[in-house]
Image (cartoon, rainbow, N blue to C red; front, side, top):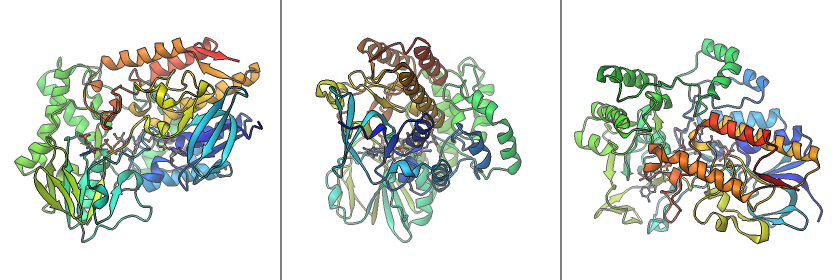
Length: 529
Ligand code: FAD
Ligand code: NAP
């Protein structure tokens, strides 16, 4: 069998783009296969109104090229989707990536040939490529979840999913809109859709916590200062569990006086952003501490939302930070608008979608357009959409029947020469994803270079090493409150998905140390041939 490339990379988001660049630098031949017509992944698909990053742009950006860091100018504290997509396109041009990316190509199947130690990759168009390695860069949040609500296909008007929004945009002027979901995508888009639409009805299953972004244009002086400090800032970020350079208050919320606690929460609320959850070190460890933060946000909702009943419905009752914390611009305020209605569907599922709207709790709601802000089959969805076959033809679906099992979130026992960027079992979605992606890409590229030097062609995680890592991932999850609620982190949003806390919660520094220790131990836990 002739080998077409050293590596096939699946996906051309930030992970696939950098993987291609690094492999080329290492002298490997590589081809990226991407379903979309362009680069950017998340930022190519999620074009709903209000889509932005929730990690500040100066941090939500690549750090592998100091030149790129210096030449790119972020214009806002939290860049919009179009700006982030422009950045992705700039990177693709600057590093001449497109010539090795094949767009409009969906990988459907990949089979490891044990005789030849090669992967055979098949695409939706029937193409077949052969490579030594496969690197998945398919995204943790890239497989949109369309809930199986009866009648969905009978709706007369257009239906939009936030995760695959029309490229030409949607004009809601003069239209009535129904939106299902109140996660991050909904929380970002609701204020903008409400401003444009004649009427917006929001169907909320679970109330969510969100903190204000206080987004603003970046002052040139601030940008200059960041650029001068970039190396130090990136280094500081790598010492933080979430890979974000913000201050963590190491005090305990319950051991702090009420007045001081209120002061800390107010200060963080006024600053805005995800740093709110670092107001105290034990917010995600101790439910009494957590309650102090949750009470603070609930009081803010009551302060902002004028109708007490609406405020009550909007007030989350679960652990703050258990589901991913949201960052918003004018979310609570939007429910004061006369053209916005909130419908609580927490206690009963939507009965059905009707041709003119939906039916819930015995009432009919009519609207012209339906928006599904219903999230993703996170972390494993995109991977399991491909029929990966490892040794003895075993399917990844089968190997992960009880939940994903990986070694370091980077490799899977029984699937030689397959690498999974930000795979389950790595910190990924609990961190600023850009540094996590870069760390994985560099680890994989270094590994391939080491193998070439040693004359090895096959790498595979051993079963015991994988078991020990899966144990470590489960153990670290059990000490936090994060694993206690029905979030997508545990697969709870997808009926029938095994309930396993999928990301590694031990923090980025501990994770990087674990990866480095494996390398220092001559790739401990891997078998080579
Ligand atoms: P993606 O960007 O998801 O790219 C994966 C690519 O793989 C896609 O283009 C997809 O089409 C392609 N693909 C998948 N399957 C196949 C297949 N079978 N064949 C071919 N191609 C395939 N993270 C943060 O850290 N900070 C943020 O502020 C932040 N904001 C976000 C906002 C939204 C709306 C969403 C959905 C996610 C956000 N994230 C954020 C997470 C975000 O996904 C990552 O930050 C990052 O963009 C992931 O890059 P990636 O390359 O790993 O995956
Ligand atoms: P999400 O957080 O999973 O939210 C989906 C919403 O849809 C939830 O409110 C969920 O309710 C609801 N839902 C799902 N199925 C439903 C059904 N059958 N009936 C009624 N309601 C249903 O998805 P998301 O908002 O797209 O965000 C996913 C992740 O992407 C985020 O957590 C974040 O990591 C990332 N993201 C980031 C940003 C950002 O600010 N930069 C923006 C968007 C997304 P339940 O809660 O009850 O399940």
